[in-house]
Length: 521
Image 1 (cartoon, helix red, strand yellow):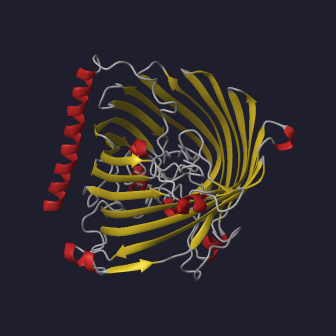
Image 2 (cartoon, one colour):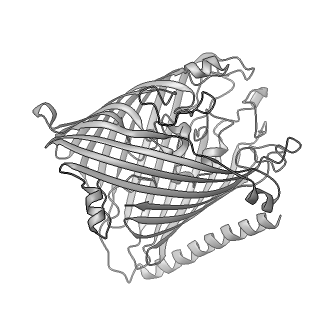
Image 3 (cartoon, helix red, strand yellow):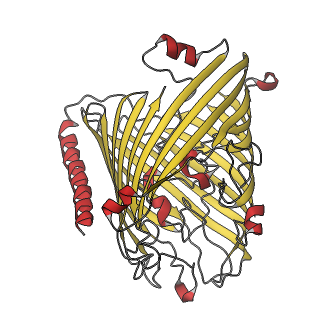
């Protein structure tokens, strides 16, 4: 009880600080001269964008110089990420979930230690060979009601090392303005709303795609991406990880399905105030061999998505982004809620928008407003109206921090898969001191459809009501310290207060707290 009150106090304090600084910003806005235009990509919400290789240490010692350039044409990089996480009620929204089954399973406490070693070999002036080896191991703390107990009961999983980059890149391929990347690579399109994480089942350890990507420059202001993706649930299908364990210990890459996809993505810049992205995405999903052999299922679907995004800087202060996407095709699902998977015609719609005002004052105050929509499945029709987030299964900062990736687990197709929502958000960020940035966000969430209407709906936890549609309130505070390019620390706090969409006993608040430290050498 004391912990809950303390957390609410911390969140309330963060919100008060944000409001106070906003008031200061309004006063200073008339005093500070207008600075440069709002950020070039105002809607980019991805907080973990990887630094390109090479990324050099500020202190150029002989050792670091030799490490970065061990021989002619070879460039190496190294980065380290440490995380400490505590979470409560993030799946069940029920303080008593798991009581009597060996302890209360709502206390989650873990650490993550990730190291990545990257190498680029310039084979020719226009040809590079790129690799990156990732090793992340975990420290787990046994869940328990006792604070002192969960600090003392710890185990480690040293896991495996895996190549999340292994590709060859050709620039000016075939004597054309074409950049061709073949192999394992990261692909982030737009804000990452639909295309970012090709391997969501292993969390943020990797986000890779096994793909062929061609980027053709049509003009100085226009280009098109043509992408083919072949993703397998089995992480050893293309490149077997080091220290790959037994079948029971192996990780999944996707949400237990194999995937094939084709993407056409056109980028065009008319001027600073109007830029456009237009895309068509085809994605085929089929339950993986592992899923079939173990009596479960991944996704089985043929999904077509066409969409467009407009964004830009309206003036020195205002920037905006507005995206809409239409989906059609077919998808197997438990439409009737009786455990029987049948194919249904897919007819879905989604949209995502954000507008930002930058004050350009000494405190670097910015405010933003956002609305997001993903249609939910109407239980009274034979079609499936549920919008599919494709490869958007990552903790998108527009919805809060990391907590929202867990809340939808029992409704969707795995951790990170968010759907069936209306989201209205408002947020504020400023720099309270040199090298420090504080972001506070409030999001109100609704369900587009109540999935338990007429007794139909998903099984498992949390318990959903048969009438309400208000999911609840999401409060987020993110404090970032970044002294330089080589080091960053973040303190994240998410707090969720459930609404009428949830039923007893799933009416308890949820908490996610994380400390994140990153070094780039």
